[in-house]
Amino acid sequence: MVDDLKTETSRRAIDLDDHTVAMLRRHRRQRLEAQMASGRRDEDGFVFAKADGSPVHPDFISQTFERTVAKLDVPRIRLHDLRHTHATILLQQNVHPKVVSERLGHSSIAFTMTVYQHVMPGMQAEAAATFGTAVFGE
Image 1 (tube, rainbow, N blue to C red):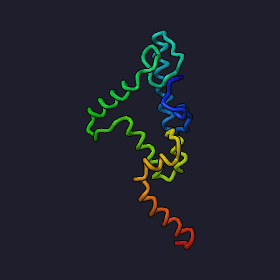
Image 2 (cartoon, helix red, strand yellow):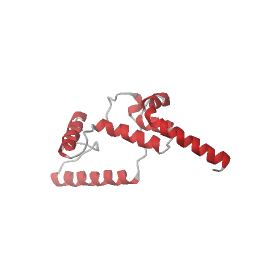
Image 3 (tube, one colour):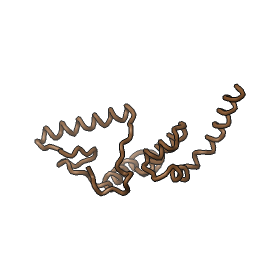
Image 4 (cartoon, rainbow, N blue to C red):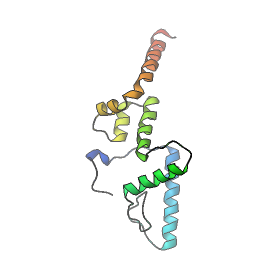
């Protein structure tokens, strides 16, 4: 575990979908196999770790991601942008903003809604249609 986190809500548990869990399990199995082959033992269990099991610096992960994106024929995106994409998709799929806020570790739902208000215009029309169907059966 890492002790020096940005905020109190930085340490949190979130549910993961089955596909992500399967990928993480494969990654963990590969790391365990590599450890067994090398005779080293990783006691901390970091997802992203050096060969000796110690955590890699977050900047290294971001830089590796940026280099990978640069090699691909895709629009430039930062690793942190995936967090924003995650929240946007959840809100567009009508996941309650409180749940999205908790997943992101935001201090309040108001902050989440301020940051992601651009997602809301299309959702307003959908809410009106849902209401119309519920009340008028149309």
